[in-house]
Length: 173
Image 1 (tube, helix red, strand yellow):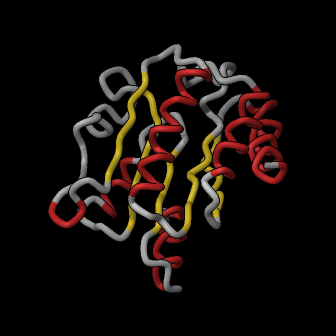
Image 2: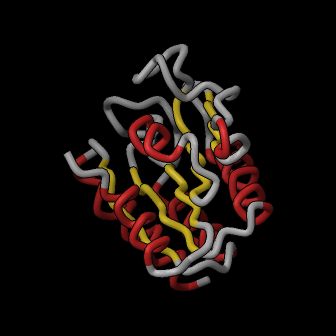
Image 3: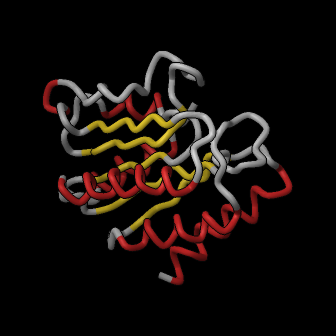
């Protein structure tokens, strides 16, 4: 297995970016990415995801997971309940982006999953296709060089529309 988001973050570090942020917006917690960077302070990891009390992976992604050792405070889990609509999801995104600004990240890697869509058959959030335009705008306002790593989605007919909406919102902002 290759963790493309972690690989991109490490490549940015190797290229001289002092601190990189990885922001996982997929419905499921980015447990692999968290594990890779949990004890590091040069890569900040933030994840907005379904609450692990009710959703996979169940054992990771709780709000009290803040990092360890040098990485203490550089891990930020934002679990959200099933049924979360865009206004609440966007507030969590703002919290994550504010923290990314606080740690003075020099680049952003976005693990872009669009399984947060209301019609996705295996997730529980209620984002609509137009919400992905706003998501892209919010990500652009971070003002960071940004890499998008596609993570997926399961509402097959809308996956492309939703992913493109993020990129269009980002480009337009």
